[in-house]
Image (tube, rainbow over all chains, first blue to last red; front, side, top):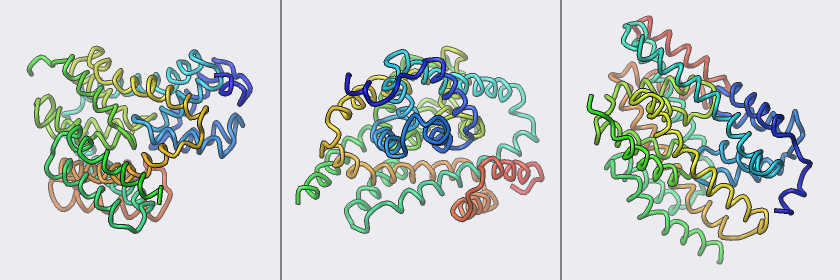
Length: 185
Length: 175
């Protein structure tokens, strides 16, 4: 705890709430870009290195990456209330916006023109996700094992449509052990 | 529509969020399987439309689960699908963040990350193919998807422009 708190100055809970509100309301697409800009470039609360470290942890942990960064950041600089303020700012507004959209969708979702626009936009959404995974796969080493694990996960969940819990339970332990052994060599 | 089993929904989403290493896209296939295939709470088209709308909203992409909750059961539905998203981040994340600041160089962290990265990528690839099959009814839909991929891989453009293009193509009857 003491270590955590000595790493940076205390930041006011309100400042944390407002900053993460700003981050989330600016982020169309990935919030990552906006979080880095706010915390590193504008407020200078974190160095580039500290931000990348937090992000790496956020990616390792389950859940939305930037949400994990949000929680750890708030906790590090202002304890429990800081974490709560950061999450409230980061998720509260999108929650309200999405509910507002849900109301509109229930009223106007069946109009033919809305349907047509949504169809076109859905095809774009699929393309964005596919492009993201193509970019992500560039980081995989040119070695058969990671590609085999990736392919098995894809077939199990994407083709066979098995429950994720089974597929992860079967694959994840082997994948981690293999990576661990490789590291020891 | 049948009354929604909110407790079951909550529990299923809770398990999924603990598995969501690599982000929300990895659990997309299982959310689709649960909501559309197993429990028939939404049609394929509704699922795709809600997902798409939430991508256009500000904030994390995962908020489509909130909108699913709203669509199924109002504020109680929002709670049933959104609170599970918060639980790993407030328990596991705080714990690990805490440990990490004590032991910054633990090798197990690297092994887990290196081991799980390929699985994450395979799962996101599964998400994108399921989404493609869900939303695209013929070759024109696939063409828009592939055009999107080509643009995103070459240019850094705000995705909202692409969504606007897709909406226009839809309204003009091109898809």
